[in-house]
Length: 118
Image 1: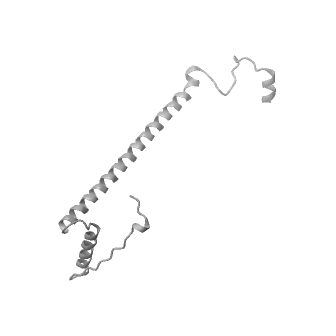
Image 2: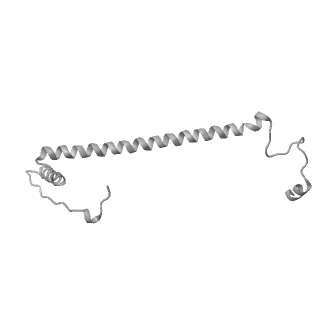
Image 3: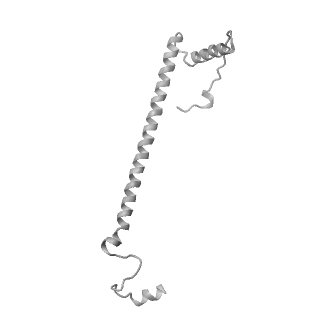
């Protein structure tokens, strides 16, 4: 979902604890609780946050899977194009046909064409 700048809010909390680490953990827990105001208690907040994280991970995995499928399809197409090119390049040897150089058995060109080619 796309957010407008008018939808953005600034969250600010102060965490206190016996150590800097504990204070950060308390502040993080308060911020998490502010993100889910509809939840009552920290257990519900954790469950809601986990559900959001799982939903995000699932959407990310789906995007990755679609990306891999498109790469496989492109690779398959490239392989088929290379096979066609290979088959086409084998034509002159297979059927003794030359597209670039005239053969002695070719009929002569009309005068107006031969004059333009010189």
